[in-house]
Length: 209
Ligand SMILES: [Cu+2]
Image 1 (cartoon, protein in one colour):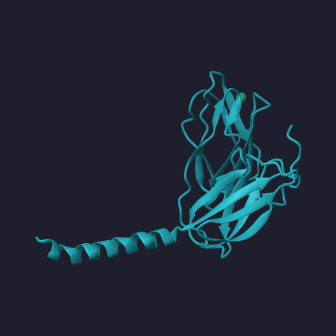
Image 2 (cartoon, rainbow, N blue to C red):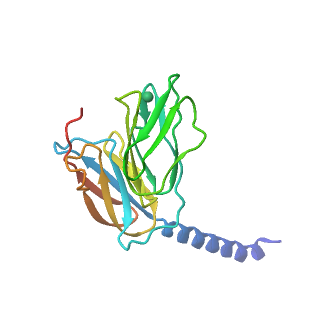
């Protein structure tokens, strides 16, 4: 095959795969960079942000599983976010027993005194907040926010996170933090998500204990 006969094929392939890559990236072209500060303007870590389509249309994604460890008599991480339906494992990595429980209405459960990894995960099939503790160690606390969307992120130490890889659409972007003065008033912004959209939130927080 000489170079003359090869060229049209190459041109076709380049155009074909170029168009394919473009359409694939357009379908998931959006990201939302979120910045969260407190009433004093300081960056806030451990907030959760999530985006729900304004149309109310829920993506048909399967909830990703998650893990909340127990390490040195603490839950790690202390704050987690999962999509509704997620299965969460609670491995005990200490060499003492823990007894993980929650009285939260969206999921009441107890993992009776155990070492190591429980045989089964706990499935969280309703949206809302689940606060967990340990019946043996009163200072242990963990927060799990269950949301009806796969588009969420946890805010890091610099008060920032990105909800990446979501379809271009109009979203309600909602922020939650366990120290909000009014836990029922979740700050919400409407964002038309594009290639590099952004949202800034200022939270009213109670003092850290
Ligand atoms: Cu414990």
